[in-house]
Amino acid sequence: AGEAPAAGRAPRSTYDSAFLRACRREPVPHTPVWFMRQAGRSLPEYLKAREGIPMLESCMRPELVAEITLQPVRRHKVDAAIYFSDIVVPLKAIGIDLDIKPGVGPVVERPVRTRADLDRLRALTPEDVSYVTEAIGLLTAELGATPLIGFAGAPFTLASYLVEGGPSRNHEHTKAMMYGDPQLWADLLDRLADITSAFLRVQIEAGASAVQLFDSWVGALSPADYRRSVLPASAKVFAATAGYGVPRIHFGVGTGELLGLLGEAGADVVGVDWRVPLDEAARRVGPGKALQGNLDPAVLFAGPEAVEAKTREILDAAAGLDGHVFNLGHGVLPTTDPDALSRLVEYVHTQTKR
Ligand code: CP3
Image (cartoon, rainbow, N blue to C red; front, side):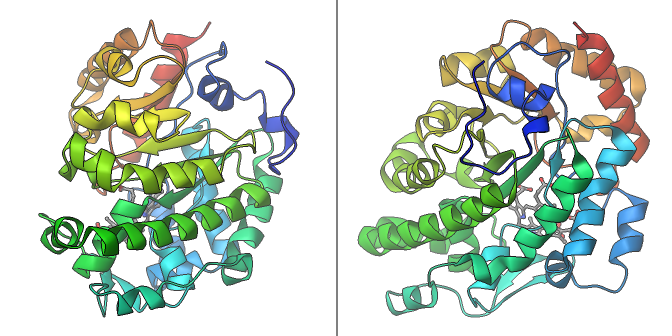
């Protein structure tokens, strides 16, 4: 397995964790498990901690971030923590006029639509997000041998919020720019790649053991459009975060036709939603990369026997894989019973114990 490279600041004790071993495609004592959106609305202790504090403000309070990040680790015994934040935090940090509206999501007051608008996307410095460095310092001290995953939004998904001005079903303004003014689009994505790269490097240098690049909405594109208009910017982010010895995970929803390209962009681990079985996903991604996934989060509403049966199918499909991190195929749904998540962690651990 070799020595842990020293460039990142992740505590040495996390190096042999099941999660990092699986990301590196090394033998594991059990299949590691964590859940996208494991910290958040499904937990009563989260709702209590957040009471009266707006979402973006809560992301800037290191003690609160650390507490919320630790909650699912304590409760579910997951194999990794994920830093509590949102993909729009670095954009807020460079002064974009955005807010997270309850029940809506991120809303940008003045959408980015013209070349002049690009000037508002200035470079991100570590000082802009000093609360992130501080929170990660608190977290790595508390987490011990449990790895912390940092994350960021990928250029396409961030661009979709900036160009649309908020959440969007069809991404029509985004695609209008992509197809109608390819040079402006390329320049926008390139700027976002630099912001995202800088934000991920802050997290790695503060002690994150792995990072996940969320390109949640990129499944809206065809493979040809992804390759031409998005892959260069995402590849720039992976190039900028190489050399730390920190695994990089790449995830999007509805990306069955893009799985090979998500790997090609430079990820070490490709996240898969529930639409493609993991053995088929492995064929699409090709050798040399671990896979993460892929239980449909809605299955958790079906009762323990059904959850176990669907989980068994996933573990069987993953049996021949070279590196598997168990996860949901997208984030935990807000009304999920937390006990169903705890039982799922226990089930995967006992079923895969070697
Ligand atoms: O648990 C919670 O939902 C409460 C906190 C919260 C987050 N984001 C945490 C978060 C809230 C209210 C938001 C707003 C927001 N931002 C939404 C939700 C709108 C709603 O009310 O349902 C959305 C869709 C965004 C944009 C966003 N944020 C995307 C597309 C992603 C990538 C992950 C995905 O779901 O596809 C995020 C990341 C995000 N937001 C995380 C957390 C804790 C990611 C880290 C993780 O996986 O835990």
